[in-house]
Length: 404
Image 1: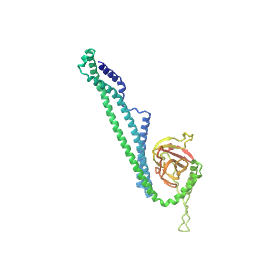
Image 2: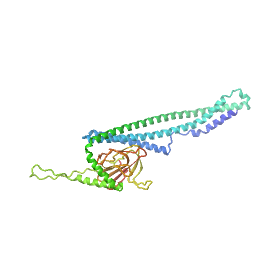
Image 3: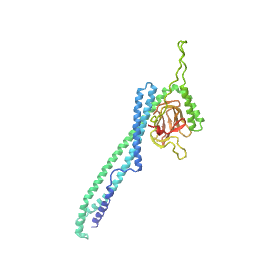
Image 4: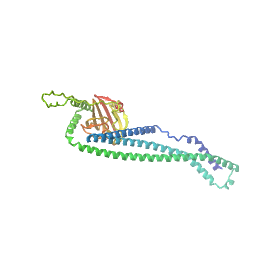
């Protein structure tokens, strides 16, 4: 009889947990899960945008009239595909984290539901092993045993319903495991694709360097001059001011009329050569882009822990992330600079200048002309932060406001 009462007590505990076990199976993410979901959405959008840019650049490369222009467009297209693969990896990592979190929740819920069933099964097993003849030798009336049997029969539908919940939870757990396997496989494919595209870009950059070897002498002179300006400048702002002044002088010289052609007939009047039409270098909203895939961690004007106010935005990039030119222009400085890592300063013309800092490798040199999206360098290997500053006539401009 005591065994029967133990079974009844187990059934009571099992039934008492019905309210807790009847909760919805919908995954309710916490703050971390919400953040991971937002990262997943952002990464998918960045990947789609990068692939769209790559497709456009590929079309431009096919339509290019010169081999040099074709090479530039192909490099920019490959850089966009690299950024797409990086965004796919970020999306894959966020997806794996979400699925793993859901899998852990399913396992915890299954363990919660299994425990009462295990206790009940153990009690029923002990009761079933008791020989029927032993009932006559135990104290208590036969009516008590009949009553315990009736209670057990009444509890069987509840047991079947609860075991059905466990079976459903096992099915969901198996589905979550399959989702995790698919997410891990997609992540591995994105990583392999990224490595392949980086190798292709390296080969293309080497090809471009071989073709431009005849220009090395003049480029070296300009690089030495930029290096001298960097050594003289007291800080990076003064360096940018010097390069802006050089860019303004260069633009004025470019607008001067060339030598007057000599007429075939000396009696004919000399034609006045018109100055070349100035290129429209005005940056408009939508003409600028983020140089690297990642999330913005510092905005314009924010004060960091050291009390320094940011003059641009800082992006948390993937390890070894591809850094591209945010807009077309001419490289005024490329190299190491005083605690900023390797930096690139791009003169867009019209008084617009961009500064990119925090890279560990560069793909451009001083004097190079770059298109928007052209590869300029790579981010660091661990906890990399790429900072981009946009200035016009020496004044900081909000990069986010310029992005389409």
